[in-house]
Length: 225
Ligand code: ADE
Image (cartoon, rainbow, N blue to C red; front, side, top):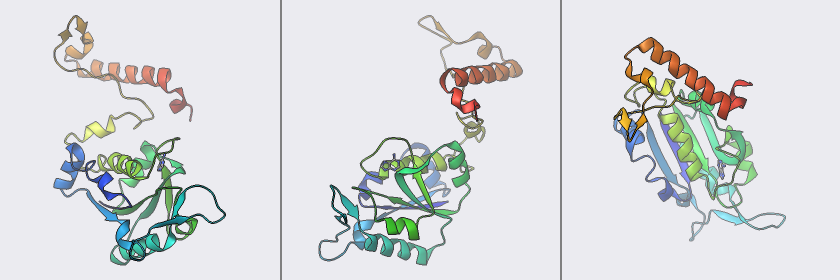
């Protein structure tokens, strides 16, 4: 899968894909993330990408022309399954959406800044608008990193243990059960006996019960759908 991210602050995206699971996805050629500097498409000597908003009001707006030129340039080179705009007024991101997007071949992700982007780009280019939560970030970059991380780890071969993505929280509308590692007794804090029993069936049942209990306690909304 290839993700092309358009950003006015590309340096913000240097680190998230260079470590751990995302770095491995890149090394294995399963996920390629390209960050395109919008400034390259900026207008005039100062490479302008933002301007005052019509009608007045505080805050700058990202101009249509640099974005349009950048998007058209990318579209002339590749086909895109989706052109996604990261925005707090978009569809709320969740595991189902991550699953769906992990099946795509190539997506474009646009990061907004300042007051937002000229609405005409949303009307004419954007196919999906995604929010990562009901709060406002200073730009779309961190949201894009969250989106791509949640998608990337679902691509087959990215995680070493294939089943570990399937047992993640939210995959069955259930939160994940508690996990423990050695030692079995740390300062008198004990690992539940059953996990030491070696009985796979009982362990599986225990985990399912814990998942259901935790989901009821913490996220009753998940089972109400
Ligand atoms: N840009 C600013 N805030 C955002 C959010 N909550 N989700 C996605 N993009 C954003």
